[in-house]
Length: 460
Image 1 (cartoon, rainbow, N blue to C red):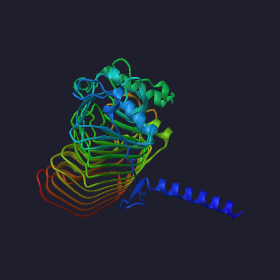
Image 2: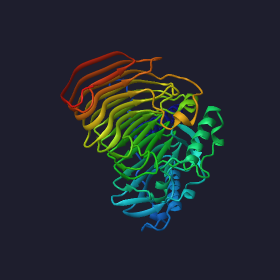
Image 3: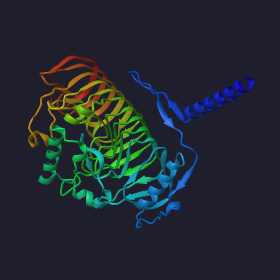
Image 4: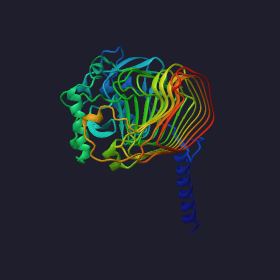
């Protein structure tokens, strides 16, 4: 009996050790926010390295290392996790597909140079395009349903862009493809039947897309250009993007798009973009309503934006809803077209609530705060309005903001069918206003406190 008790006790100690060991694999990061915010978990990878050279990789920028990198990732995953190491040098590759427990580590002066041959990114994978799910060309770096994954180190992701640049325009064939995809989503056609990587559809791939993943880390590396959205977190849970240096000035080159994702921290990053810098999205119309996964609990702090269309953008794809977003202690060094911009339309539905911007400085902008409920872009004439769903927008807070020059302080255009409610603008200082102080349409409970300016050029 005593021997049995000792055995049970020993098993108990082993089980306890396993639990403790499992917990110790994560570092907890407490993130302050004006709403309840879960602790962010950062996975601690096993100390095992898998250099890509061991699996046949060759530097120099001419040998295609897709197979070698894939072999290293598979070996790392099978061993229980660790780092797949890309040494200094230039390494040509096609798509990189992640597996769980893998940290793609880019040594300093390592450059992953991605091909721009579309056939390299086939077969098509489950992805999304501007808020609609489909099968399309693989993102250059892609993960589907993975846990504990990372890209770290001081190296660079630098895709070849010659071919992708020819796909930037939106000719008739491309617009017809978008219409076809929209109609398939409206009719609830199974996603596996939405094959878009064909003909002259030219739906460009993302640079990085992590799709339905958990415990993501992006830390320290550089990005130089991207075919489409640069970093896309899609239906992910728990993640960090920090210390990144992102520059991409092509068409639709958002810096980071966080879509139908929760508990995510963006910190200490530099963005220099041809489109929006930090974008919070939540799917487009029918797919978003089907997936029913709001974007929530997002914190952006201590970031610098050089150029962008928008410093912090919400939408326009936001049909599953966006709540609890907090940007603070960020700044711009040049011009952004709008500083804090929420955009939707009468087809999207969904909601935007509890969005905060605090302690942010801007050099030059259009609207310091802008909300527009009639943003349709090419969709206005491309497809009819099948359903009218008015977005609910409430709880928008801007405080302690400084701007050197702006077209206006705030331009709020709500929808009379569901007006914007509860907008608080406090301690905002603009040195020079170029056009008008404010414009307000269909807004209830707008509160303004200590909003100042020194000069206004063309008072309207």
